[in-house]
Length: 403
Image 1: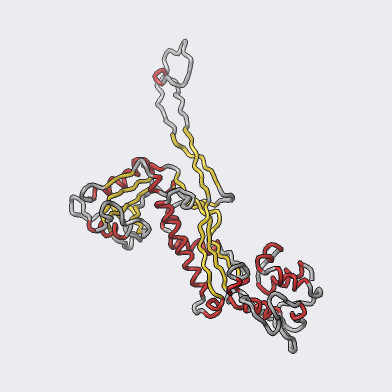
Image 2: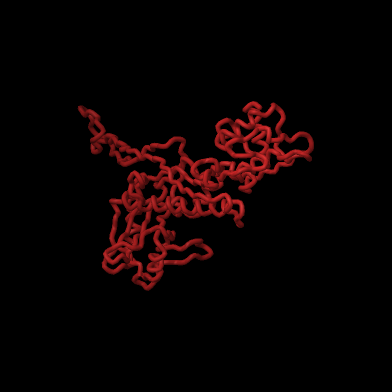
């Protein structure tokens, strides 16, 4: 059989589009060589007819079953596969006996890429990604021009005697239009990879109910979503923690609460953002549930609570009318007594999350050392970036008590 025919048969068996590259990831070299030794046109994906020893689908399942070594009645020793033991299925109705959703029926062989579906799962667990602007990335780095100094408009008086004057854009009092210059900067998004690896025995994959791969799918999304939140909030910008988070970016509005945490500390936090971003439609406040509990008890000078819970008109809590987002990834063991936390606020139109690759889950039962121990490795990863265009449009309040 030629490589083209092998690909066609595998596509039918696995219900997946393949090429030579993806074929090499799905099956190992021994299986490819065994298929290539068969006569052209002799193999179909389906159940064996009466009298045949084994069909193609069953043969693939047996390959997984003997991954720990040993002898198989059809295939013999796994390191001495005999192409003649693979009996082609011919004629009759073809019925697939492989299922991507069932590991023991071929699911182990299928590398899964579901970034479009799974990126929404990450959003379920990442508060900060939902607030920020998502930017698609076609390479590992994207650079944006930023405006660090705006234009100024001048009222021009009526000109009187301009004889002998040379316009230079600086004499407004003479009726000259004053020149205004832009000041530009740059903001870069650099994608970094975050991954989770789990190794599961093939027996557990085959016998688990609910299915282990389904359980892992949700756990991967939660774990990576929380990892992204931690990076955006307090990433250190080092080789093993490559994203620089808000704690290390905010310098202009790095505030501290007074000796007694009061409602005016929250006002200072919110309006530190508005002072630098006066046209912001809103300034979300982000805090841990322990900070939220303290906010619920704060009152202004007129004995009105500054925190308001969700109601029919407002679908989420508010603090001074600004939306409040609860985030469990904010530290609560700060301060000398390890009993303080932080509040964050910002105009998140200027916070960017770059998506180079959404959440991808891959499995490979043929990789070592897992293959030698009858295990399957699951790897979930995404490539993302984070940055802010203007750090002064964000604020951080430290010294917030947790009790």
